[in-house]
Image 1 (tube, rainbow, N blue to C red):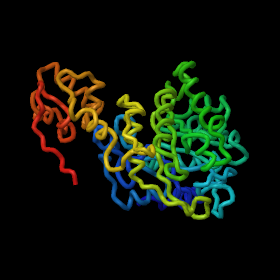
Image 2: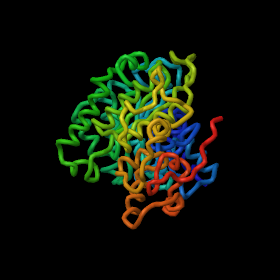
Image 3: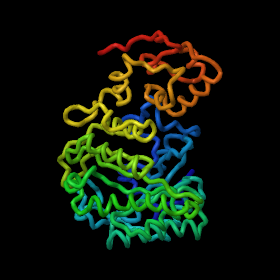
Length: 409
């Protein structure tokens, strides 16, 4: 029933841009080949309570509409697109790189804002993720992105979710302006340091163009009143890494992730497993194992939500995480197998170290202890806490619970 009305030039552009928008992860619920799994063992992205027919979802995806998970677990249809697929940068992994034989599309800000509002009024989208290739420099491109957001906020009075990409090396006033328009800003680091970035995107400058904008955003958040931001609060920030393209190790990626999480308070890091694209310098480079991305996500959540540090991660001698076990479980096997946590006395930070216990379940346990002792696994199950993962690493009223050891295959 839908899309009969949308075969205009604008929507044809959206369809052709959407082919490569999976390279820009932004709040999606579905990760391939596996869902994101938090260190507590829970799937991060809940299923939508309003599942759509498969043909409807396919048509949405063809336009660049993905399903975003917002704080609190709400699922929201979000348009992901670019102002232009033309670009003067030559990033070695990118389908939009300069010089590639590829059909280019460009939106004017008013045109894209109008197309988005048509989709919004039709009930197809609730939010927007907007990025762009770089034309006539980063500052001019950022102005176009900001103009699009201004039209939506001021002319169309759009009050919903907007996630804006920050172009490399933009000006401080542009960042402050973006913070008055957007719910979230992202600066793609792409690589963990300047040496790796030179192998991946030689025209980008790691510190001056990518790190500095994130520092400025955090400085504004710390020094200026939050009511100046969109909807009375400053936007969150995120970043992204391309994983497996230039030989970087997990230690390199995660040391950078830990710094930005704890010092610049980014909400999360996204990880894209490298996949070769024809007619790019890395077209013959092998694709990265997607499970590596899952382990990096799990570890980044350990930094953000569980107060783990880089030195506690189970890296091998090459500086990479094992792919066959999640990092929190690996840590627990080494540290809790012979020193289990007493659930009736442990502080919240100790509870968070136990596999199967995340922030929500730690609060559940603390609240339950005020009413009495936890003496058996069934007490935890009655609280809605799965016990299979945690049983080998805890004490209940001074005793180890009965559990079946997993078989090593």
